[in-house]
Length: 367
Image (tube, rainbow, N blue to C red; front, side, top):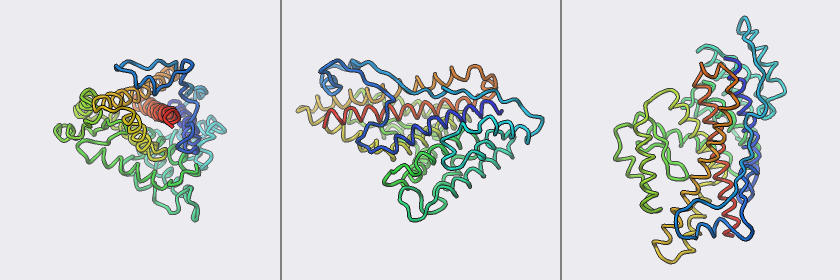
């Protein structure tokens, strides 16, 4: 179990520092040089959006995020839990720079080495307790002023490697990042998970799609009532398809892990970078450039399609990067949940960075 878990920890450490750097910037700034938009001289994305038709953008793209650039060396299994933990601590020492900022290295190593239900639960509980203790600085507004803000979501997340690591990464990225309302991030994560588990339509993303728990298989009508008709018929149809796909997914452990990771990252990132407000602001400005209702709907629909397209492209690149980077780790083939968690986390982070970058470019062009 050690090698795939260790590689997963390194992937989270690498992406966690990227998230922290992005959170440290203002909403109007450039989130990161993650997605490069290369346009012809004199051309803009806004001008292309205003053109008739629903064609793809004329742009050269560069995705600059290597999530598995430094692969962890093979970690041989020890003769016992103590020896294995010692080997993993040695392998990871000095390589988890991001998690070291909250002094979480030992807890992460224990979670990586956990090989049975009891040790996984114990390591998960210890990591939550450590996070809660380290993430409190009374009298400061850039961190949490009281204990318990993050532990509230533990019942939703559990204590396994696949969901705890994304959670710990978001905690560390938010702490001390300079966000004006950092307390709203754990609240947003909690609300997102509540929506996912208890609302028939699930958790609604910034682009109108829903992440739906498999338990709500029979409530198709409620899900379709949430479809946004403001973007036109095609956008509404696409959103409806996403709702139905979510409703008919089988309730497997992999499904829940992927969904929970996505809700954690989506809800935390959207709140930290105000993606909902900025998305609506760009939509309103684009619609205001047109005089007829049909034209307003057309440009909003085209913007939504591009917003989803750029996000899907970068998500795909990140997930493929993880898959290719872990092909040489044979344990991933026998631990599919670990691979699913690593790929889902990397893909969702890349998706959010792409959405942020696209909104930043349009925001500058629209003024």
